[in-house]
Image (tube, rainbow, N blue to C red; front, side, top):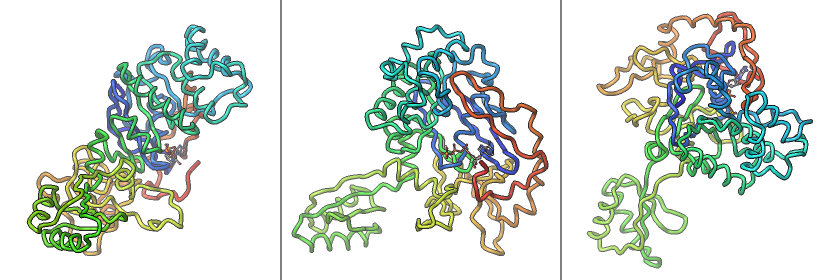
Length: 425
Ligand SMILES: Nc1ncnc2c1ncn2[C@@H]1O[C@H](COP(=O)(O)OP(=O)(O)OP(=O)(O)O)[C@@H](O)[C@H]1O
């Protein structure tokens, strides 16, 4: 099991990860989701001991990665598929990793077979396609036959057959009782692969729950209702009855009605009472992609100027409103809660409160709302000084998880209330 507690990483003035607490359990695929720049890779690097947390800790089986005996045999990772010596063949790349970790050479042939690169094993990896490089990275992760596996965007560049193969591989590894932690931007793929989700936005936990719960909590279910074609008066009569009963009704392109706010039995009863025949009455749930988009709206850092949503930070509907329900496992309303006794996330942007607004008191059983920006500025303690990174903070990469060393930021106390408009890299 991977366990993070209060995990925080700052790069100079940039807070990449803020106070993350979660567990990644064995026997299931846990998807790790978040918009670009939300801190997924940083979190994975900290799990692997490639970056040192500014605060908090993360352990694998109860120990930090660097304290694991024979770590490459316990933990395998694909972090950066391009981090290979291009002049080496796939075979020799894996052989050198195996030799560094005391893994028998025969395992190289085994994993080359598992990832389907056996026929190109002697070719230099610099001639590999993106997909072949991904497969080589996955082979490296599997080399030590580890119980814990981390994959950062494993399906990047893979064709549909490759994506299917990765999906089945992840599921198989989890079914063998391993801990599988995988990040991806492909929601449709995650919906098919993951059992559990950890979602972050701007470095902070937004959700930690099963895929089903995530979709249920972040999407408004609706009913599709269809009256017989060629009977428009029935459709109109039903629309009136549904609206009168408090439902919201929208026409679908195929002539059906999309109804929210009324349960299916109630819709059926209303149709029956109005003497309207139905050709269809079916429940619908949003896709993971819709639910994800809804939740992470407010946490998107990079948006095209041509996107209608550019220029404003729209919180997930229903959850940023004072008094709105907070689904179990949620980080909190609007995605940026300040729990009692907790430091506010200096990185998170809060929706501005109207002037003169009295401080909100959390209702019983509800989480506290973040204070208005002007209140925060007055009430929040000055940001703690950012400690100078110990020299050589980013230690050498584990054999199965090569990644570039992370340059660290300035040692001076940082103004953490500033938000970089550009990626610090
Ligand atoms: N070594 C570094 N130095 C300075 N800033 C960094 C460093 N590494 C990451 N960051 C910043 O931290 C934030 C989180 O980056 P990270 O790569 O972890 O996000 P991500 O969720 O993996 O993004 P993506 O989905 O685009 O890969 C970004 O704003 C990034 O610019």
